[in-house]
Length: 317
Image 1 (cartoon, one colour):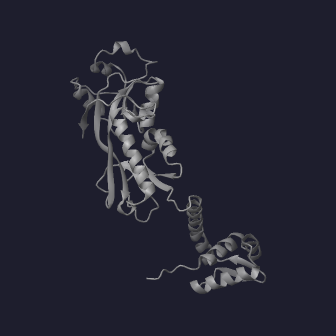
Image 2 (cartoon, rainbow, N blue to C red):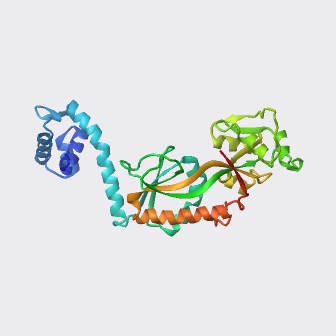
């Protein structure tokens, strides 16, 4: 079925004319004659069967239809130009990877390691966009996503990377670590909670056989980043995903007093649509991210911020 799309030349001329609301200035910008611009606009209006400009003597002004059309095609023309320039820059080598990510995961795990991927594949340009929920790839420009595993992912190749696990962290500059002899001793330190996971501390204490029927008070925060900053500031001890605090552990801002991990029922995955199976950029990224995840889990990651080998973990439903 033939698409109802006007000439791209006419659309580019219209976009310039609409922006200037002046055929002469549009002609100068596009290196055309004013009559050529007028002919392209007339051809576009005939195709659309709608007037786009109101002509008053020697002046032209966008009418409501023209303004509506200009507002909607302008961003798409810019996007087409951007993708064309990127493709030309890489000479058709498929060196562009559009990646959807969960912000904290990408900031704390992916970006600190990405220099290694860039060193291996300098011809691949990566663009990142935030997508906190699963989505359908059709109708988007995404090549792949680094995300949580979820049943909503359909029609995709799914590569499991690792499970999320939380460990206790505390500031050695604000607390006497020598006073912490066993896991149960953490109950005597102010506990920091993530607001959406208020039962995590109780489950951790149950796991280490330090169950306590009393309420577990403490400050609550909406984001893990806030929990981590509170722990760094000495406000208490926090349970956070291990890889979220790699840099803080390396710098000594935080320590893990008892390396006993509680595993959440969340698994990080690389997902990409079936129709991207043969994409060189996707396959290069898949090979690298799988290798990085293996090294992260085994504690042999080459990144200096990598933690020691993960401790056995208990599943948290």
